[in-house]
Length: 298
Picture 1: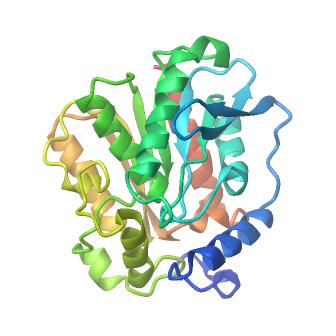
Picture 2: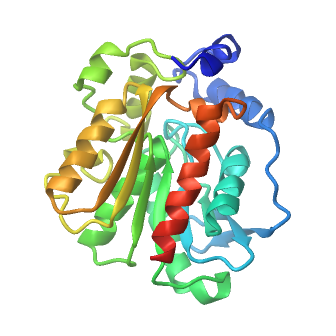
């Protein structure tokens, strides 16, 4: 493991999603400790997407933005909100020069699948309809996220393709959770890795699916047809249970004719980019912004 990351391991709370309320509290505390991003070059506005129920979003508008991304936070479908995601959404907007629409989707287990996907789809449709008002070209809308949020983004791209929904120009998938079956080599062998363990992954999927069978929109690794999806950037962490499902999904998209950039970050673990003092974390976050900037300018 990267020595700069390893030094922080004792400070991380126990990886546990068996008690969602406590887990949310721990994530909020971790997020509050992250250094504040520079938001001087952008406008930030909380909006509400008219849906049933209404969906809260936070819109980050850098000056002279090139395009937009529907951004979905991580947290195992159980944790996270607009406030915990603020440090990362703001940095992405700053580095990419793009409008970032951070979505406060409903959380499991109170609201299992398809609540999060429905909220995200409503946000995508709203953004496409209000692109001029929000300050970007409607033909330049990407979807993306981290961890569970990246899994939702992948499902969103599949659904938009199948339902002929709003056009998506790019997928930005950072350490996505894609497969509820937990049968890959990394899922079977990385059972006690930092922040994300096999038990935590099992609890996350149990909360998200709510006892229902997984569909390809819930677990995109189950999709049999990946043709016609938007170009993608997919990043994985070396010591992460979800590593191999991400790599496999990237390879399957490539084999289906989708243009993909795949980056496997050595020495990292799931979510380790939150340790901003580490050089590798700085490179990871900067790269997400650079990749999105290039995709939206194409």
